[in-house]
Image 1 (cartoon, helix red, strand yellow):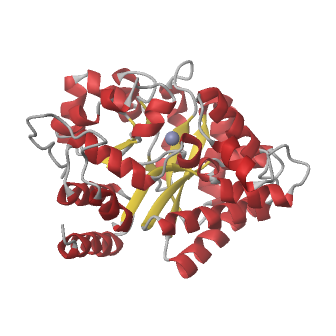
Image 2 (cartoon, helix red, strand yellow):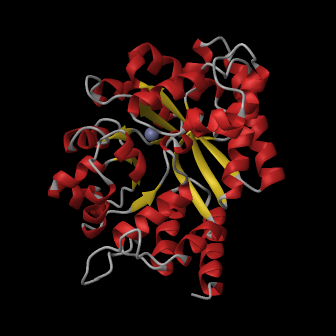
Length: 358
Ligand SMILES: [Zn+2]
């Protein structure tokens, strides 16, 4: 169930009046994350480790300088940082290190389960053999669960801006190489100029192979893209989907069919999909009864993390600890974790809330 916004006569809590202990509650809350990108999760710490492996890279090696380099300025800067990180992932060991260290950063935030959006085509284009790539992410996944207690699953996404050849390659790797952790098939990249319906045959193949459909849609465009994702790509969850807020019929459809949205508030401001956090349509989505989950997208690059996103959501929705716990349970319910794992993580959230002194 999506928590309803609280009735506060003075409106949503502002940053300054938000109860300070709510961030403490969020920090310790066991969480699941459903929309977070692989390379986009490389924190300055991880980038420093990768840069140390490749001294010829232009990425600063000094930790303080690197911290400054990573401080989010604008979208153009995000792209620059993103590309420089992509260029640091050159071999299978880089892939393994990146993936395992992402899990370490997740463990520090009490993220217990994450569906990481991976773009294998980008790595293969850069010369990493596909089989070696699969072995590297799987090795990291097994290690992360064993050593850190973080369960990882994969969503292989098509880099939409590379068109149908990239879709073909991503579908081939998903269906033929299918690593054990793969649960879903996605579509990222710009929405404008890359209509969703052209990717239908690739989603059909992935769905026939037993993968879940989770395309990005309605991030920078309106409800028509979300409709396309639902009708053409048979989306079971929608990446972002905030454009749905402009179409009451679509909101009703999402609510009725319990199709979750993967909402990433800070990312939407950073990419200028919404003008500010206070203008974010999250409250409208929740008020319409849509099942929303809270996610971080490309956290270090947008200067955020999942805990910050939960705190933002709590402020926008006027939630207390129990409301935040409900949001966390939304993500568990909307995940592709097995039923036993879902029940266990939900019970952990309930236990944590019951023990919370506030
Ligand atoms: Zn995304």
